[in-house]
Amino acid sequence: MHLRDFFSPDAIKLQLQGTSKDEILKELISLLSLDEKSEGMLYKMLKRRENLGSTGIGRGIAIPHCRSLVVSRLRVAFGRKPDGIDFKAIDDKPVYNFFLIVAPPLEVSNQYLPVLGKVAQFAKEPDVPDRLEMLTAPNAFIELLGEKDI
Image (cartoon, rainbow, N blue to C red; front, side, top):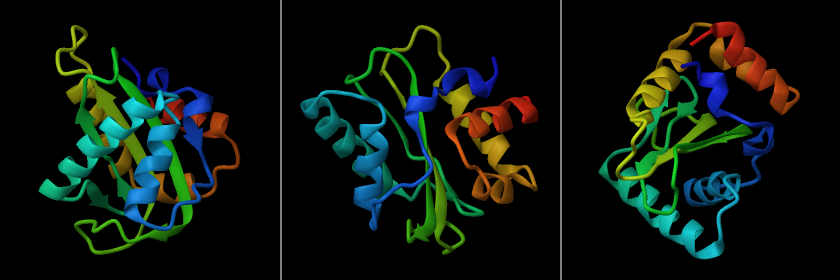
């Protein structure tokens, strides 16, 4: 299992427009191409998860994640906000890079936690924040994942 296999160019946005945590979450959700009702339900689930504690893990990276019935299989998205926003990260610094992970409650493939772990492992690579900042196209993001072979 390689992280790059879960991402597709249409679920990657390098110029997020949102200026608040809520707007960024909604924009990330929109990358999954769900219907309006499902988007609303997923937003509520992610908000509930964020209220337990921010998914901002530091180094300018956040990994909002949850399980929800609105998806039938594991879904991921990546968004970048070049200006950064206050996401209440554990290091109290702005967040620029967002990895959204959503899985159904009962997932036969059981990939939710392994993918979450791989994203966290990728985020800890010393050069990753700088490399993410320099991305110019969605395919470059997928190539970076492939290069790291995580």
